[in-house]
Each structure stands twice: as structure tokens, then as C-alpha cells.
Image 1 (cartoon, rainbow, N blue to C red):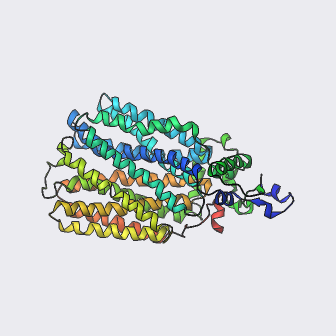
Image 2 (cartoon, one colour):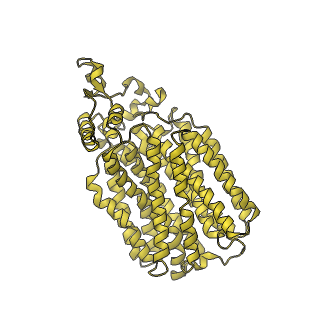
Amino acid sequence: MDHDEVENNDGNLDQMYTLDEALSVVGFGRFQVLVLCYAGLGSIAEAMEVMILSFVGPAVKSQWELSSAQESLITTVVFAGMLVGAYSWGIISDNYGRRQGLLSVAIVTTISAFLSTFSPDYITLIILRVFVGVGLGGGPVYSAWFLEFVPAQKRGTWMVIFSTFWSVGTILEASLAWIIMPRLGWRWLLALSSIPSFAALILYGYVIESPRYLYMRGKMNDVHNILKKMAILNQTELPSGMLVSDRRPELDEEFAPAERIGLLSSGSNEVTFFKAGFSSVIMLFSSTLVKTTLLLWVVYFGNSFAYYGIILLTSEISSGQSECGPATLNSKISDDASLYRDVFITSFAELPGLILSAIIVDFLGRKRSMALMYLFSFIFLLPLFFKPQHEFLTTGLLFGARMFVIGTFTIVGIYCPEIYPTAVRSTGYGVASAVGRIGGMICPLVAVQLVTGCHLVPALIFFEVVIALSGICVMLFPFETKGRKLTDTVAACNSS
């Protein structure tokens, strides 16, 4: 039903309600918990496949007698694949539905992750891990899908809760590595780590399309049916009256060309993937969104660089900080239980970081919360410049830095899909995440090469500069999204 059809009815506005009003009345209940569990399963799968890079590379290097460059390539190709995947799945999700995007992600990730277990040689492993990365690039689709079922009240808190699934995945992977690697080796670790991806594919049949995506497409009957299911499971009732669209067509004139090629209409199935993707990206650089897009890219780059860098720093300096030379833990990682222990311990840093995020994100708002956490992560890294001799102190500082960095990672993951309209939400979120993967690809050159080459101070300076720059960009974000309704079109952002 479109805007004109609403005005041609009896005109009793009291008997009409929008999607946001319906979500507020239905509330957060059993239905959203089920959605949260499935989206969380996808997040666990992504976290495990990323964390596994810390353990598999060194083991494969030893078994196949690889060079350091070949070992690093195993990590690099995964992030390269994630860069491609984040962009591609975002376009598919925005133009063909969240459900279609989730299916594609589950298929690619599951098949490639499981097959890498049987890689007969280095080249095969590299190829399969590229495809794993492409699948993992769909992480933003899970987040955007869950977000669109959540009412505006306390949306930040629930998105932080969703982020805990990533931390569960990292802790689970560190635990598996600690148990499996010394006994069964890297192939078993790869096989067991693919179980969450298998589960996401098997449970896909229960996935429901995002009501906000359908709402944007004008499919009011489908939206209403989903809302009825939500109300029944949540043991609530829908508002009385008729569901109507709150979209104002007059706001969209600037973006009419994009609509004509199907980006914002129900005719997208007739448009080529290339045209749809190109139009989605062009909209990210519209006068309304260009500042936000560029600032988010810097923040995502900084977050990935700092987060993965701190994980690598943990393995490089926690246990061998006083020894500077080419022979470090990397050459014996598969046999050194202390490294698995250190990674396992610092993985728990994410839990208090997430708890703190949940407490302050809806109290201080997104921008202030991120700025505060950037400040503390900056402070925790400062003492490392003075090379503390006690391993406990070093591990504690890295624990604190990781705690606050995961907080910024989590909150920008809330802010990004909130600030983008439904029409380009997955694309904008996906492209920002893809830029973040570039940070993940570059950070090993700093965290590993500089530290093992006796250049800890330059490496730390690099990290501090990136963190400071990211914090400045956060303060330059155009507006706060706490308590703000999600918008459906780019033009509607002007009126928010």
C-alpha cells in the first residue's frame, strides 16, 4: 500500500500505524530472541574462522616448510576475501532481500570452510581460504537483519548483546585450539571450527525476511503477517487499525534515478546485479551520506587495525617480550601451550568490554561511548612504550586495550546500520566493513614484522596514531543515533 492509497481511505489517522509503532508495541520478546540466536550463530561462525588464523598458519608453516611470506598469505587472503564478500553480500541483501543474502553467505562459508580441512597442498588451502573469507564478509548481513527486528527502545543494548556472540566465538576458538592443536592438529581444528557454519545452513529454513526490507518495498501484507507472528510469540497485540507506510515520496526526488533502476522499488529482480550494486555505492556518496561514509571508513579501518593488531601483539610480546630476535614463539606455536593460554586469557577481555558497552551505549549515546573507549584503549597501550619487564603487567595492559577496542568495534557496529537507511543499509555496512578488512590485512606487517624485527616502539606509535585518528573521526560524525528511528530512504535522512 502506498502513501496515496492511505490518504484515499477514511482518513482516520488514529486507526493507522507505522512499522516503528508496531515494533514498539510488540516489543522485544521470544520472536526476537530466536532471531538473535540465529544471527548470533552466524557471528560465532565468523569469529571462529577469523581467530583460527592465529593457530593454523604457524602449524601449516612447520608441516609444509613454508616461508614467512607464505604463512602470512594465509591470513591476508582471508581478509582479501572478506573485503570482496562484505561488498557483494551487502548488494545482494539490499537488492534481493536479507534472506537471500543470508542463504548465500551460509552456503559459501560452510562448503569452503569444511573443504579446507582436506587441503592436500598449500595452493589448495589458499584458494579455499579465499572463499572462506568471501563468506565471512557476510557478517554485516546478520547484524543488519537482526537490527531490523528490534524496536528503537534499548536498541543499542540489544545490539551489544548481539556482539557478545562474536566474543563467545573467539573464546570458543581459543579453547578448541588449546585442546585440539597439541593432540589432533590443525585439520581437526578446521573441521570442528566449521560446525557453527553448518548449523547456520541447516537452520536457514526457519529464517524470516526482514519486515523493514519488505516495508520499504511496499509489501504491506507480508509485513503485517510477520508482525502478527511476532505478536503471537511475544504474547502481545498489534496496534488497532491499518499498517501504513511513513515514507514521503516528495523527499526522494533527488534519488529518483536510483529508484527507476529498482534500488528502492519492488522491480529490482529485473535489474542486473552490476547496476544495482553501482547505484547502491553511488548513493553512499550522495550529499546526504558522503561525510558519514568517509568517516565510517576511517573508523572501521582503525578498529580492525587495532583489534587484530592487539591479538597479534599478544602472541608476539606477552611471553617473549624480553627476547628480541628472529626465533620467537611463531616457530614453535603448535607445541607451546603458553601461547594458547595467553590468547585464551586475553579473549576474555572482550566480555567486560561488552558489558561496559551495554551499560553506556544508551546512556551516553553512540558517539560519546566510542570516544571514551578510544581514549582508554590509547591510555592502556602507553605503558608498553617503556617495555615493562613483568609478563603479568604486559598481559594486563593488552587485556585492557583489547577490552576497550572491542567496545569501539561493537558500538560502531550499532551506529553504522542505524545511520544508513534501509535502502542501502547492508551495502553501507558491508562496504565499511570491507574497508576495515584492509586494516586487518595491513596490521600483521606492523604487529608481527616490526615487533619481531626489534621495533616495538614504532609499532606502538603506529597503533596509537590510528586509534587517535579514529577517535577524532567519531567526534566528527554528523549526529547521534541513540533513540532515533531507522530511516528507509536516503532522502529521509535529511528529515531525521
